[in-house]
Length: 182
Image 1 (cartoon, one colour):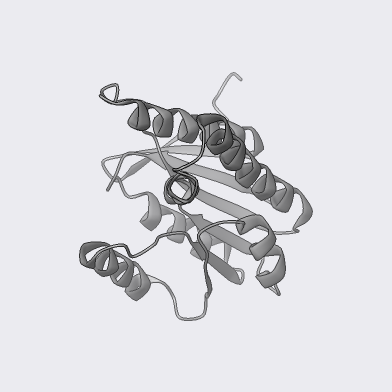
Image 2: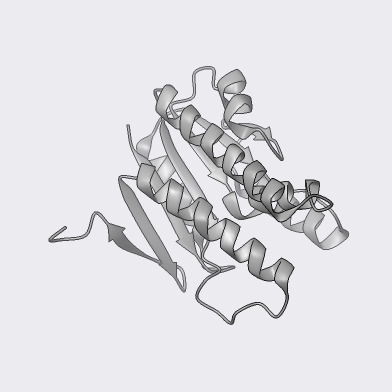
């Protein structure tokens, strides 16, 4: 089974590329959507993503505990797309925003660990989508820096699980793992 991580900036083509990869695998797909429609604009984005998703795919809309949710819903799917880790970490961050930094870190780590455990237990290919948020300016406030750090840590953990990693740049996938010579 393949484990693929697709990372890049906002609107770089990550979701589209993930769907293309899943279609090329030609197997039943479970699409795990982590977005919450907190406002009208986000609701519109979600609807646009839903329109382009093949009707034959099963969709699981979940905002946390995705590892256990996937295990319950996997059924006959042989490909799992998780779109996206960025919003998953944001969901956990928001859910525990009144907690200490240590507690937030613990909850994010638990969430990603649960996903890794699921990946290791399920006989399916995983295609995970995430944003790279460490290439821009250092966030001006502590909350922004904490979020950036937590997502960066989550991305590192998931990159260890991935046999292939693609960096999306202006809609173009650049294979960064496995790289020649490594």
